[in-house]
Length: 107
Image (cartoon, rainbow, N blue to C red):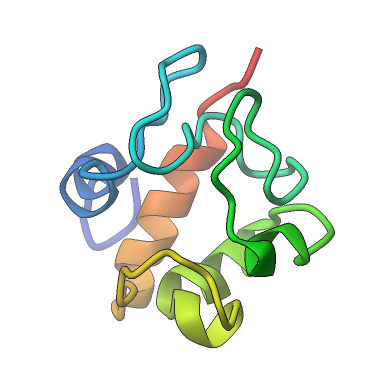
């Protein structure tokens, strides 16, 4: 758990859970299931096909650093993304969410 006591699972549920799940094998919600996203290729959740052209063009893998920049400001990081979320301004909260996602697995 991060030093400031924030709980990544709770932050994910309250901040991201309206559109995403992080449970491997879960049916996708409005957005893709994010289980196992850290280290996976961008726009690659199995069975999810509604990625924006901008996100599909973002080649590479989701590192913690890449996720941090994206979660800080999705539109600034990937201009043209259909994700309307404004971002998580607090670096400690972003880190907690990313650490939580890093602990999830995609089987």
